[in-house]
Length: 138
Image 1 (cartoon, helix red, strand yellow):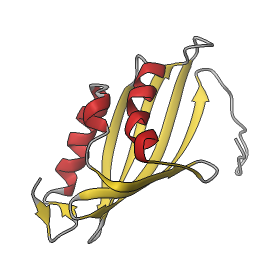
Image 2 (image 1 turned 180 degrees about the vertical axis):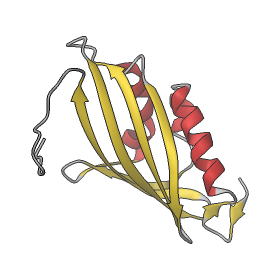
Image 3 (image 1 turned 90 degrees about the vertical axis):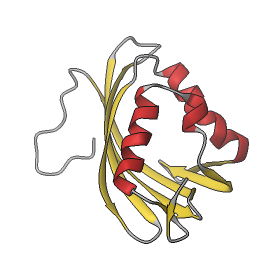
Image 4 (image 1 turned 90 degrees about the horizontal axis):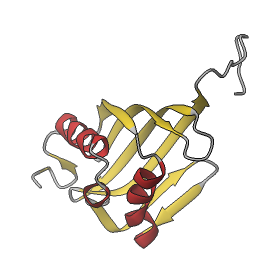
Protein backbone atom coordinates (compact mmCIF):
# COMPACT_ATOMS: atom_id res chain seq x y z
CA UNK A 1 0.00 0.00 0.00
CA UNK A 2 1.42 3.35 -1.02
CA UNK A 3 1.28 5.91 1.77
CA UNK A 4 1.29 9.70 1.91
CA UNK A 5 4.21 10.56 4.22
CA UNK A 6 4.35 7.68 6.66
CA UNK A 7 0.75 7.60 7.83
CA UNK A 8 -2.17 7.89 5.40
CA UNK A 9 -2.86 5.90 2.27
CA UNK A 10 -1.78 7.90 -0.80
CA UNK A 11 -5.39 8.76 -1.75
CA UNK A 12 -7.72 9.03 1.28
CA UNK A 13 -10.82 9.46 -0.90
CA UNK A 14 -10.03 6.27 -2.82
CA UNK A 15 -9.31 4.47 0.45
CA UNK A 16 -12.88 5.20 1.61
CA UNK A 17 -14.27 4.04 -1.78
CA UNK A 18 -12.24 0.82 -1.50
CA UNK A 19 -13.46 0.32 2.08
CA UNK A 20 -17.05 0.82 0.91
CA UNK A 21 -16.58 -1.80 -1.83
CA UNK A 22 -15.24 -4.33 0.70
CA UNK A 23 -18.22 -3.74 3.00
CA UNK A 24 -20.69 -3.84 0.10
CA UNK A 25 -19.21 -7.21 -0.87
CA UNK A 26 -19.50 -8.32 2.79
CA UNK A 27 -15.93 -9.61 2.62
CA UNK A 28 -14.90 -10.36 6.21
CA UNK A 29 -11.35 -11.32 5.28
CA UNK A 30 -10.62 -8.08 3.40
CA UNK A 31 -12.46 -5.96 5.99
CA UNK A 32 -10.17 -7.34 8.71
CA UNK A 33 -6.98 -6.33 6.86
CA UNK A 34 -5.16 -3.02 7.13
CA UNK A 35 -4.95 -2.74 10.92
CA UNK A 36 -1.80 -2.50 13.03
CA UNK A 37 -1.17 -5.42 15.40
CA UNK A 38 -2.14 -3.21 18.35
CA UNK A 39 -5.13 -1.54 16.65
CA UNK A 40 -8.20 -0.69 18.70
CA UNK A 41 -11.78 -0.06 17.65
CA UNK A 42 -13.99 2.03 19.95
CA UNK A 43 -17.76 2.51 19.65
CA UNK A 44 -20.93 2.95 21.69
CA UNK A 45 -20.55 3.26 25.43
CA UNK A 46 -16.76 3.09 25.27
CA UNK A 47 -16.91 -0.48 23.99
CA UNK A 48 -13.62 -1.55 22.46
CA UNK A 49 -12.05 -4.40 20.62
CA UNK A 50 -8.50 -5.22 19.66
CA UNK A 51 -6.50 -8.22 18.46
CA UNK A 52 -8.39 -11.35 17.35
CA UNK A 53 -11.78 -9.88 18.38
CA UNK A 54 -11.21 -6.90 16.08
CA UNK A 55 -10.07 -9.16 13.24
CA UNK A 56 -13.19 -11.36 13.42
CA UNK A 57 -15.70 -8.53 13.97
CA UNK A 58 -16.46 -7.81 10.27
CA UNK A 59 -17.18 -11.47 9.40
CA UNK A 60 -19.45 -11.76 12.46
CA UNK A 61 -21.30 -8.59 11.43
CA UNK A 62 -21.76 -9.82 7.86
CA UNK A 63 -23.12 -13.14 9.16
CA UNK A 64 -25.57 -11.23 11.38
CA UNK A 65 -26.63 -8.63 8.77
CA UNK A 66 -26.82 -11.01 5.81
CA UNK A 67 -28.48 -8.51 3.44
CA UNK A 68 -26.39 -5.50 4.50
CA UNK A 69 -26.51 -2.65 2.01
CA UNK A 70 -24.03 0.10 2.89
CA UNK A 71 -22.59 3.27 1.42
CA UNK A 72 -19.64 5.20 2.82
CA UNK A 73 -18.74 8.82 2.15
CA UNK A 74 -15.34 10.45 2.50
CA UNK A 75 -15.63 13.58 4.66
CA UNK A 76 -12.14 14.83 5.54
CA UNK A 77 -8.57 13.89 6.37
CA UNK A 78 -5.54 15.24 8.21
CA UNK A 79 -1.94 14.06 8.43
CA UNK A 80 -2.91 10.83 10.15
CA UNK A 81 -6.73 10.62 10.18
CA UNK A 82 -9.53 9.90 7.69
CA UNK A 83 -13.14 10.74 8.54
CA UNK A 84 -16.05 9.02 6.78
CA UNK A 85 -19.79 8.59 7.23
CA UNK A 86 -22.07 5.73 6.31
CA UNK A 87 -25.70 4.83 5.68
CA UNK A 88 -26.84 1.23 5.76
CA UNK A 89 -29.82 -1.08 5.89
CA UNK A 90 -30.20 -4.73 6.82
CA UNK A 91 -32.87 -7.12 8.05
CA UNK A 92 -32.67 -7.90 11.77
CA UNK A 93 -32.22 -11.69 11.91
CA UNK A 94 -34.45 -12.16 14.97
CA UNK A 95 -37.27 -9.69 14.37
CA UNK A 96 -37.32 -9.66 10.57
CA UNK A 97 -37.57 -5.85 10.68
CA UNK A 98 -35.61 -3.66 8.30
CA UNK A 99 -33.02 -1.66 10.24
CA UNK A 100 -31.61 1.66 9.07
CA UNK A 101 -28.29 3.02 10.33
CA UNK A 102 -26.45 6.26 9.89
CA UNK A 103 -23.00 6.79 11.36
CA UNK A 104 -19.69 8.56 11.33
CA UNK A 105 -16.25 7.12 11.97
CA UNK A 106 -12.66 8.18 11.98
CA UNK A 107 -9.54 6.15 11.39
CA UNK A 108 -6.13 7.08 12.83
CA UNK A 109 -3.27 5.71 10.73
CA UNK A 110 0.26 4.73 11.60
CA UNK A 111 2.62 3.87 8.74
CA UNK A 112 -0.25 3.26 6.32
CA UNK A 113 -2.27 1.02 8.66
CA UNK A 114 -5.27 1.76 10.88
CA UNK A 115 -4.17 2.04 14.51
CA UNK A 116 -7.50 3.35 15.87
CA UNK A 117 -11.07 3.32 14.60
CA UNK A 118 -13.77 5.27 16.42
CA UNK A 119 -17.43 5.01 15.37
CA UNK A 120 -20.78 6.53 16.34
CA UNK A 121 -24.10 5.49 14.84
CA UNK A 122 -27.82 5.73 15.17
CA UNK A 123 -30.14 2.82 14.29
CA UNK A 124 -33.89 2.63 13.86
CA UNK A 125 -36.44 0.15 12.54
CA UNK A 126 -38.47 0.83 9.43
CA UNK A 127 -41.73 2.48 10.43
CA UNK A 128 -40.49 3.75 13.79
CA UNK A 129 -41.72 7.22 14.59
CA UNK A 130 -39.23 9.43 16.39
CA UNK A 131 -40.02 12.50 18.41
CA UNK A 132 -40.97 15.56 16.41
CA UNK A 133 -39.51 18.17 18.76
CA UNK A 134 -36.36 20.19 18.27
CA UNK A 135 -34.43 17.92 20.64
CA UNK A 136 -34.42 14.15 20.44
CA UNK A 137 -33.05 11.53 22.79
CA UNK A 138 -33.92 8.69 20.37
